[in-house]
Length: 218
Ligand code: NI
Ligand code: MN
Image 1: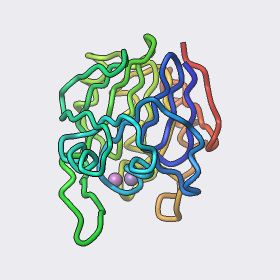
Image 2: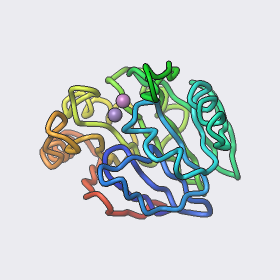
Image 3: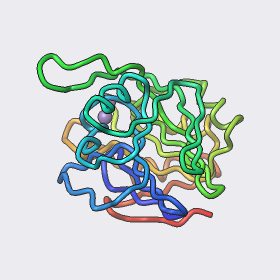
Image 4: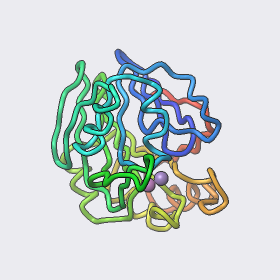
């Protein structure tokens, strides 16, 4: 499976299907034609281009209902649930964060913010979404054994590098890729310092990608 960090919280997973998670990049140009879009929560830096992509989209009830009203083929689910879409498994995990659909007018309640465990071609990816650190991340590791964990390190709106270090240990995936940093000055962080700190104290490998860079995970 080919995993690409497109920037911010946006990743594509390419195998027998192409999955796009949180389709927002600052430039607006995503350049991936997905089979399935997955949205962790309602903030605009995660819903992103979902309305323009017009693809089958996996999201919580509230976001799915909103998207369905806009003509998107949306699969609704909620925290703790697992669904299979076109042979790809999506489990919605907890995240500690808010969720508000920043639509026209005052917007809408966006349901609970979440993360995803996605299983594609036997590779298990945990995208934590926007979240604080919480110890039940251990359950994600125990239950789903992710091959890679995509963890926010930006701070301010999510956990920062210090908390993400502990998150990496709670999840226990052999590979961590940091995300949700550097997009704007408010979430500026040093991912190389994060990598060094994790790799100095654990057996976990941290891969720092540049936006647009890929890695292959088997
Ligand atoms: Ni958010
Ligand atoms: Mn965000």
